[in-house]
Image (cartoon, rainbow, N blue to C red; front, side, top):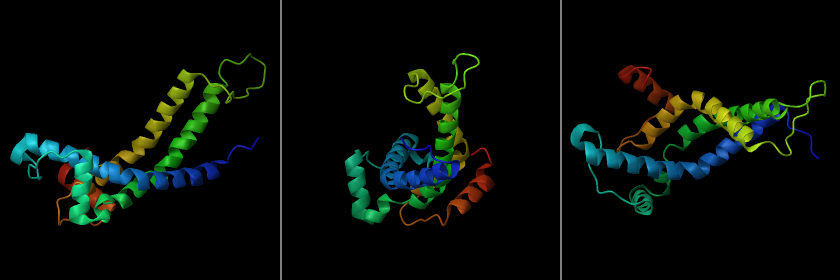
Length: 178
């Protein structure tokens, strides 16, 4: 049996997990966001910044991106994803670890030392802990996710300089609730 990780180790490994997840998720998010934006543009007409375009399937959309911008176009928004996930994945794992330790000790006989039962936690308890950890992670991640999405949906030839600038412009133009 190995010793549990310290909080610092959980933060480091969580950050590494966040960075690794970005490398896999960024191309998929880029394609998904473009498909959503194209669908919105086709239903909203000229009310959006995007020109209506024919709806492309997932693979066709990815191939179109590769054809027009090469492999880097699939990774547009990677820095924003890293800025979002590297600091927030540790929050998820710390919150999950904390909540699992609290909930797994619940219901033990009074007077006995509380020993978390991590071997066989109840399914509902595990789901509740995961939900709590997800909320704890996404609350600080939402502003960064908004910036990432806006960066990933820019029109060809345009570029957003940074996540911080994107957040600043969004707040200036649309207010903090945007």
